[in-house]
Image 1 (cartoon, rainbow, N blue to C red):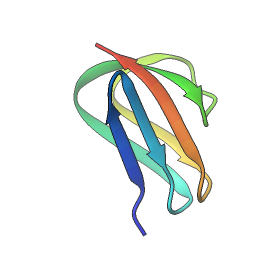
Image 2 (cartoon, rainbow, N blue to C red):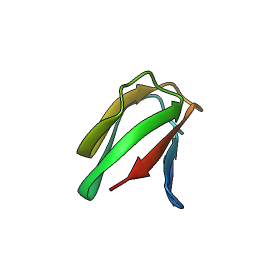
Image 3 (cartoon, helix red, strand yellow):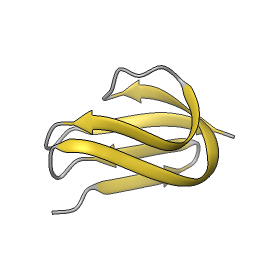
Image 4 (tube, rainbow, N blue to C red):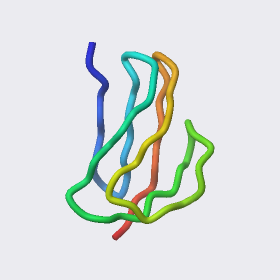
Length: 64
């Protein structure tokens, strides 16, 4: 089973097919502000790491 990732229109989302630590590496730094799914502060990063349960979804608003 593979996780599903969405990136576009100012959003980054991930739906977890399996539970555990998720790591999304990006080609350049972005500011990611969680909308739902995780309790993290807004951060400017080129890699986002968080933990999700199986079948959970996270959504970030992103900007450069």
